[in-house]
Image 1 (tube, rainbow, N blue to C red):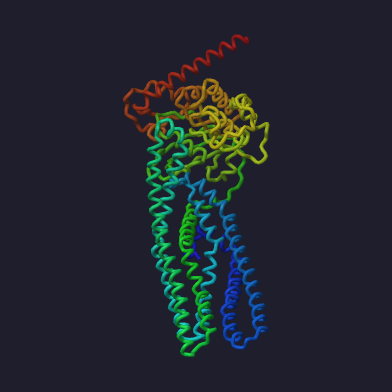
Image 2 (cartoon, one colour; image 1 turned 30 degrees about the vertical axis):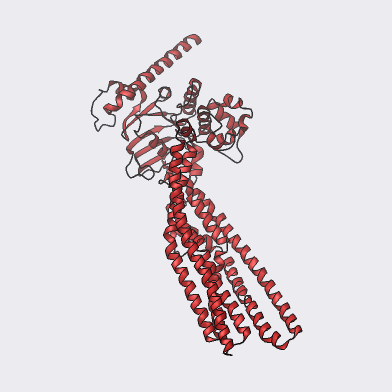
Length: 612
């Protein structure tokens, strides 16, 4: 129906959804056949009235014909309603069976490539296809094959009546072809500009605070207005083409029906046909051309659906279903990174190259380095958010691609730089929206993150709704809730990217205690930090610079190397070397971290003396 060639194996998902409705489509085709045969009721009734009833003056004949025609019209009405209901359910079934895959693809696509607009175009594509399948457009395609029947009956009436109908059909079919050729690019441009304006609007909505605080409202509004004007121009071009050709089609249909009456009248005058044939042939041609007229009127939705269908197939090809994987045992041994190279989604140049290290259970790794050194990119790969271009990330020897995300997720705790929470309650967010969360585990996670008392200060406690993206919470509160979520059910690997960025002193203490608790229970903690408080509790340090691991080893050894490194010493190929431009900012971290370590050691000795 959408002009799609034989689907490739990766495209079969969308195609098979429609193929699964083959029985229903066959039923619609049969119903359409009966409806089109019953559509002969009107012209044949008029033929009999003019040629039989009026000629004979027989009222019983008129009544009998009227009753028979009414019954046929009633059956036709029931079948058309039934056809409409079946089409509606085919569209609904298409949506229901494909919406899960589309949702999964929308969520996964930002991890694979840059998405244009607001990223929701696949959902609109799904709506376009469902709306077309559920509407009147498909009925035109089911009725078009019956056009030769009506044309053949017109030829049975008279040769010139048939020729008039045939010429009309050729004209309207030609208009349909012209409509297709002229409409494709304008409709494609309309979709493109609509995606662009949706992207601008979504960015403005997401950054509302910045826009208001910095007085950017007028500039952002002007930018959106420009993209909206481009969309309106493209939509106007598409609408103009559809409107012009649709108007020409409707006018041509009226002209042809009038021409049919004129030809019929001329033949009646020549006494070659009866008046009943003249009226019946006019109705017959109207019925023959109705599907073409409907097809032209539905051409814009059809093109939208066809282009959407193509984009959906392309999307499902780019984001295939993950192959089934066996459930592996709970990890408990180590984390290994082997020759890891990472390409951010949509980029061609790697931002992390050739990283190797290993961390054993019960250890904590601090990742340090200047801004833009690849720290956040690295941790995204550690949790499986971004797949490696080269190399492997392994947990207990199994690479992350050997785990299904649903099976690996409970063993991973992740706190990204920009903490993203979901609209729901605090408890739901901490419990990762489990269907039947463990209340004790939720409270335990909150206590481990030092967030329990904070949560209880809310009027509704753990049942407080936090709004979209946690808008009802402060940045520090979101950080604490995000940390609680990362610690829920004691995952083996806990990865924290700038966990103390928005925290006060109490919050920093909670982060340090959480890292220490992960180590104590035999887990692994990976912490990206600029501030030294989190470095004081780790036992390993990885220094990143320029997307490469410049130093890795025990914390004190790496920090000592940083402190001893000359300010402008050129980097060598040794994995423990330190580039000069990275030394200055890291020396501050190293000095402060060493001071904190010494302070903790001194405090521990004092505590031991007191106990002794």
